Length: 125
Image (tube, rainbow, N blue to C red):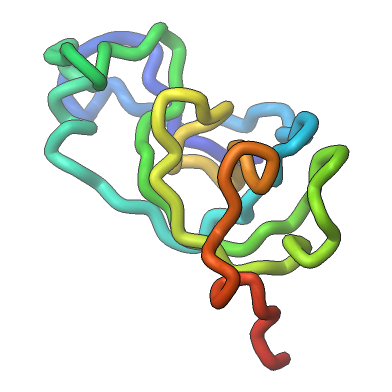
């Protein structure tokens, strides 16, 4: 997958494009094809090495970002089939396997917290 990777702390120029192995979601997780990603002031602070509290400076190398919108394109073991193709908006938090500046990201789903029932309906195609 194509991703932006941070290999050192510093200004925006430390972010470099890379091709990484595709993510495979683990048990209870989904892979999301990222269609839009948020860029937050906190992302810049973390990139420069200014973090703390609930947002520690990431271990490097890292793919930055936490906010995404996209569609579920792969299910991990134990994830209900109705998640396949579901539109999602997510704050990935500290447990994400890739940040939002990547083609795909992977995170937990229904095994720990499911979406409201109204968001589980598949969109008309």
